[in-house]
Image (cartoon, rainbow, N blue to C red; front, side):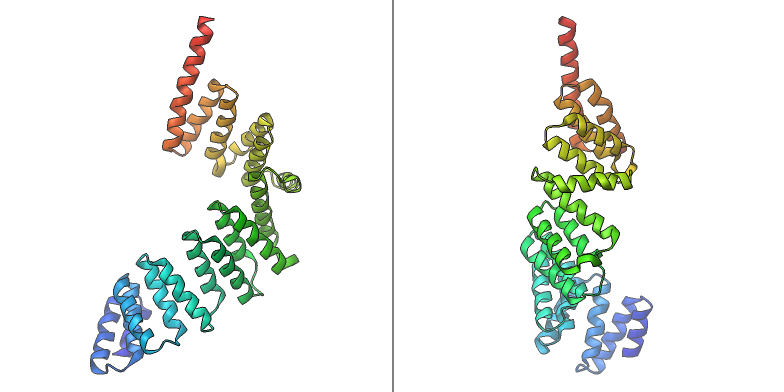
Length: 299
């Protein structure tokens, strides 16, 4: 029955696997392999509470088994108990199962829980766990922190990547690191060297939408709205960035009182990617444009 359960699991028929493993356990309740097979079959059916309970019982019997701690962590994530899952992964790492995949998973949990310092620490440990791996996964961790607004943590992660990988960072990963550093610098109102590098990136790749948007943001921060408008206008021609670039360009024009010019851009953005905030702003600009027109008519 145990072999039959394994065969069903291998073919993806987890309900049949569950039945086979239950029969095996009925015939021999001491067989731990069958209990693990049943727990995994339950997990694959998204019956996370039952799977977690089974892994819990097995952990109590064999607390030194790192694979059981990690298996229960997956079930706990399915239940939404992410910090308990993080505890399990930390226990597994303490038991020696500090593989890169588990540590990056741990870092993702900490990012979702907004525990930035622990996220950076977990991702740095993941790099050390697999020193020969490319920097791509660590770079993605830095991007995730940046996207969540954790700019200090993102900067810390970038510094650790550059210190650990040095010149071994691939070209695409190096570009992403540069974008992240530039984003942080732009948001802090700094970034002279990074902006020069971004301009070089745009010269090499005119369709680098992220670089164009960052250059526009930097120009705005430094009080250069006309220059910002030019960068956003270039980004509008790139499908992936069209909506955001139209919104940012329209905002620049609106701050200059050019409501009639801002309206078509807002409408274009709304057609490309409808958003409630854009619609609200569209209505506000429309009202301002009408008021401006009425004032000119009175004059």
